[in-house]
Image (cartoon, rainbow, N blue to C red; front, side, top):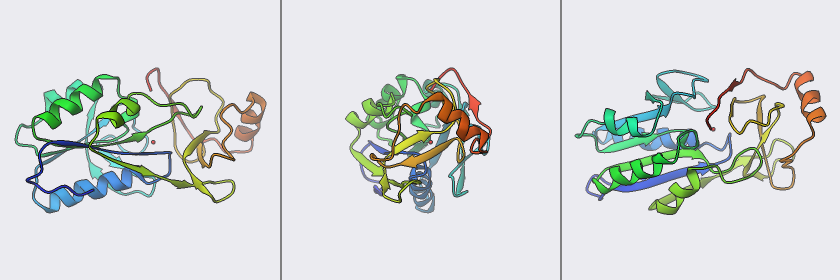
Length: 210
């Protein structure tokens, strides 16, 4: 969804499983805004330092400059009032204040584009994304390819042994799975077998919730 400069404030959400191209689509929209000479600011959560501390980086290595913030309300503190378009990646890693922040920005005439997971490793709604979806004007649901059978995939399968809701990782720690192949509660011994087989990649664990 490419919104023209004259469009009133709005919220756009790009959501889906890991490896479904969410960050790529976010970067594409923000680059188009930059090409149109709109003022753009981009933010990512402090917890997500997998590939870069000062860029949003997709799994295919597309990247764009971004500022790190620990909390959603820091976006308001760092915002240049001349900014027209705000990009936010990994929305699921923020707390519930993200919804209020996005609404405040949109009510002020800003275009807000947020990418994030809609469900967690158990297949449950991943807050605050469901609440953000409810207030967004535009929603794009991206699908990956199931790494088991090749069907369209909308679930994120965790391969590392952890009951924590948030374990930051990429390929090796997670797979995209379709509804049929998704196993939300794989037994711990199966997870250990996967790790022993070399499927685990370095993952950063965090106490708060791609």
